[in-house]
Image 1: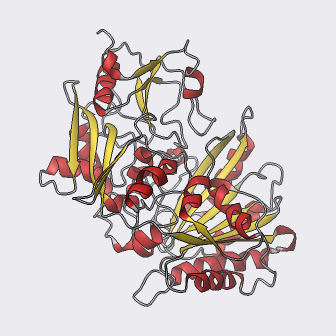
Image 2 (image 1 turned 45 degrees about the horizontal axis):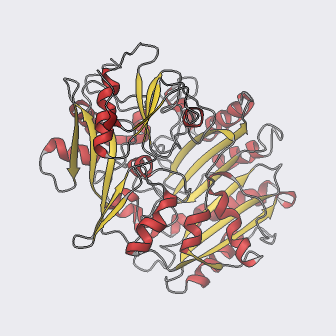
Image 3 (image 1 turned 60 degrees about the horizontal axis):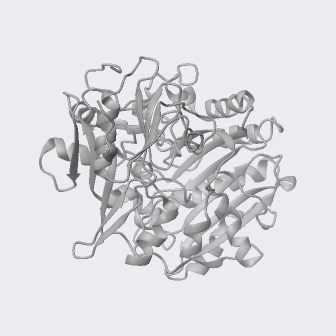
Length: 520
């Protein structure tokens, strides 16, 4: 089959652009594909995918993968078995239909694009994450959340329609649009599968439509602070963790809950670093917003008997937020930060550290044994885990106003979300860091996984972790799909069977075909 010039830019191994496009945000994973496609339109995606399907393939190099922003934490996009990468970076358009209050966002748009392309023209915001280089095409379909989600819900709560390039049973590529209003079962399943079913499962997402997006805040109050590790013993550590969890367990957005819109992060860095961090944000338009965020800091510091000082180090996935408040005020006092600034500077557009990530939804505050496991891990292996952090994000409130079956995001009664993170320099094996984070996770959760129970409710597909499918680290007998999707998994498998019958889109944790068949 002759190459189609309507299939986008083709980047081969001899092109100087090839090498940087062979990896995503995490340099731990690389690919050496035959080529990389950079389509600019949905039609070019369709043609590029059709060409890739007709090109020679071997069992060792057979996968066609898709990249939106490149933030996949595992090797689902970049690995040795990848033959073609379809990179959507050039598809970064946003169109607004004011008559229907609908915004169309191409899949290559990143969080960093949204101020200029969404907020400026419309005054609206998508309540997603804060890292500017995360692509919408992967973030949204994982059930993306961020600092505005306790106030406004998840990104998928506003998803009205999705356009996907799918491969039929006879190998032909079609562009299909599915909406929230579809009554046809197959189309309804396709839309629903993109409200938390994860990326790389059903086809190539080209465009997403959102309806009824909330107004962007004029500004937010942002407060950052920290407790110096040299003053923290196990009792104080446990008190900080308990205070943070209890606060958000108690403030879940009832009719009289004035803290319903407040977002908080507890950054549990390793004891070899300078401090444990506390970050809070609230829309400045919320009544008594400045008082609420100040009172929140006092509540979390209650009984710690150490002053909350400035936060001087950046950690983990919210590195920009960690220092932004101090940049504006020179202290831990709440600062009114324009939303324009928050959207532009949070996160990091380039990453030179390899990483491993794990996650857990919490339906309650952390029980004592989990806090104890955290203390043990964060005060041991000082050299190995210096660049480790366990980030506890506030959750719930507006997120939990939806029922679990309304979207493919099953976890709708959690109050916290944990992200366990370990990093190491490029060129090192990371064996010690992997051992550290795996041991911590096993020690925190029975049988090594946070299965649904009194305290926990599984894992976030947006932070994929292949260890969940490894019986060495998951001894629960609970399969990884249940940890991510709960009772929603059978419907996702039905959608997989209908819309990707040949299992073209696959990786180590892709949705399994309904007949249980493996890759072709």
